[in-house]
Image (cartoon, rainbow, N blue to C red):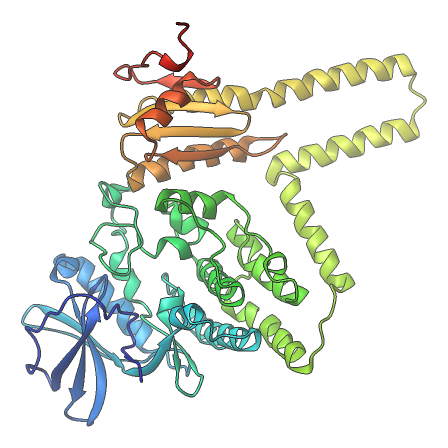
Length: 480
């Protein structure tokens, strides 16, 4: 039998036996279960209620700031107030002798991550797990609590097949202080790596492969962020692979922010179209295009589960096709004043052609004027890209900037999380102002070999090179 605590811990890490057999309040500490990003987890015995519990000792560095500790305890107590069969219960939160600890439900079972690796999940089981978790998450969202770190290792499945969502509210401890004056100083020097095993205070909160686009950019989170992460877990359960992966954490974050996931029905041909529709809605880049919260996702998962159990696979209904068309229109036409202006111009031109007897010569002049107007706004992209290069060149770690079509490559000495977020925010600002053409994409690279970097410097499209960068002679093309 596999025994795991309710904390999503890694029980393969080194031992820390300093607390074993000691008693904190009325909890007698037993075996070490593992170490996670926020502390050490033990199995303990509640001597009052005579039951096993999981006791997580929070790292002292995370609670050194009294204000931060106070905010964390408030949020953790709010999370503890949530009771649902699909949420691992928090029993106690306290500080004794400057040691903060959390006492949680002890769960025996396996994580979804292990079930995926061992290929023990079928389609119905995957949908059932997603449904149970979304029901628990819906209860939390109604209580205005965001999980922030949903991943396959944070969902336990008990021996009787019941799913439990772990570590509710604990990821808040890894967030920046709200008093950080709008800057990202909490990210300075932060390694952008997957966090569950060796997370240090000040790194990006969450696990890279399961982040939402807004989470990867360090933006404010809302309920759709949890929906995105749960969509990734559902995608992983039914396909056995993650929707967004890159050669490095930076590449993965870029894929999450800009690239579309392959449809699950392409990876596995026999999956129901409704499953694709649910996952696709979860994984939309803009929060407002996803389910607004987990509760809105529950009904669709229930219908999908019923169809799977009955053996019925319905094609897309007319209503669903209309929804997809609405989404295409909403994402194809710029929002706000730009979109209104484009639609108004089309309607006005149509009215002129229908209701007036304007001469073709005059219509030609209108067309020329419209073409000049179009070229003016289309060339805005070039002007904005030039401004981007100017701004990027002022970042001291930027070695070079190259532009090929709608793709920007920024090479840095070392890509800190704050610089990644800043560069992507600059590109987001460009895309929001575009009226025509494709959106611009950016790749932030700090993993180029010396030869690859030298080759990049010789290619067309280089817009900026730092003064201390030397272009070596191309000995391969030198005539003997």
